Length: 287
Length: 270
Image 1 (cartoon, chains in turn orange, brown):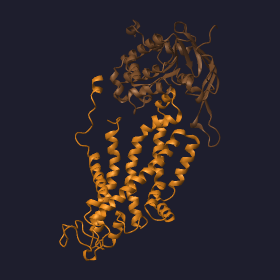
Image 2 (image 1 turned 180 degrees about the vertical axis):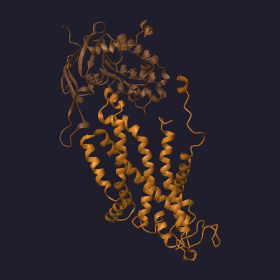
Image 3 (image 1 turned 90 degrees about the vertical axis):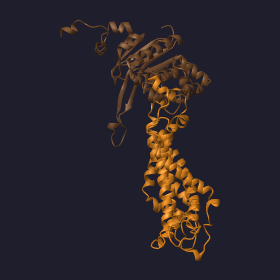
Image 4 (image 1 turned 135 degrees about the horizontal axis):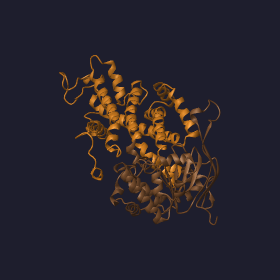
């Protein structure tokens, strides 16, 4: 018994955990590309050249060297626009998801821990909030606040905080009933400090998994809003606006639409899987 | 009566709201759990609190350490009534009123290392709370010093319960409530944990309330015993007296449930 627990436990499954490493490599690639966009991108993402319009990607006949993934209807380099698009996608997903996470989790923890009036007010607020159709709500919010990245981020945080509030409240409620909360009281802890030092560490894995999921969702919402032209100006390269523009030319220049779509797909998928992967890897209780 | 008793409980009532039968409007009906208890706990003695499940023994224990608020009655602790004190007024007293929980897996925070679990209450009560002090407490309950770096799930059940004991004694209390502390353990760990508790109680001059449904454990460990049945005290006194001359059917039934230490001839005749 003592011997078995002396050695560090072997992780279940052998070798590399693909659920962690595949999404992590994609996200790392995305971060590197976004940070060094200026040096990596072969062309100016805004430079138009009508002589080079709708060039196919490198593996098709008629492609130009240097335009790896072809060009769009204004002759702008698709690869360069995707690289700069990653910058915007990541920026929005990190800022919006963190804001959503902090706001929703704090409310969820307060509701779950204190119960009573805090619980009633916050839960009713969540119910009312969730009755709004989210995309419509976002469009409305951006229309009121004006287009731009700040509005997009604010819209995501204002809509999606309920996701965190609900899940975190439920988890906090479970943890609050554990004996370690009573033993903290016996050990002289104040009520508020019990929430932050005892309960928060136990709710944190749930919050991190949700945060990752929310980063993926934020990328989608940003893409939706740029698709309907409510994000930043049309010139700025976002994956959503590239998809919107590519839609018009899908029959003869499918690459304008497909490549940003693939990037979007892998990013959202990676963030969703990463949440669970991180939990499996770093949760001391699960190991 | 010469000196103030350590704990003196008078006319203690406690009820819970019965949420399952709550009407749509208006308050939920109350279930009476403790129905007017009177008891004394003598200083330096180990008092067993026995009863079947649902008899209110855990509830009584949690009132003594004021994790629960009684509806009415007095709980005099060293001459001070703690029944009506609010959390702020209780905090300085809590150091003296420690508790060991039934389920150590749930009562030790799974995200904190063992040394931190022990050191944190000491820190909160202004007793230091260094790594060295935590190690000292670990060694005192018979665990190796390097266990401080483990998480609770890396320990066995008996080891976890020792950590619970270490946490309670580390703050130097005068009273410890032990709530069914061995019911989740195998027989040999049970014996070790009980021996440890009675040794420490003797060394430190602790007063202990020991909640159990197992009378054979009570007989070995306790000086006094209180038998509860449906929120009422049915037997109360020194262990020998209650065991030799039980006053109620409940006590007799519990006594009959003790497994016999030796084989009885009549076993073969059946």
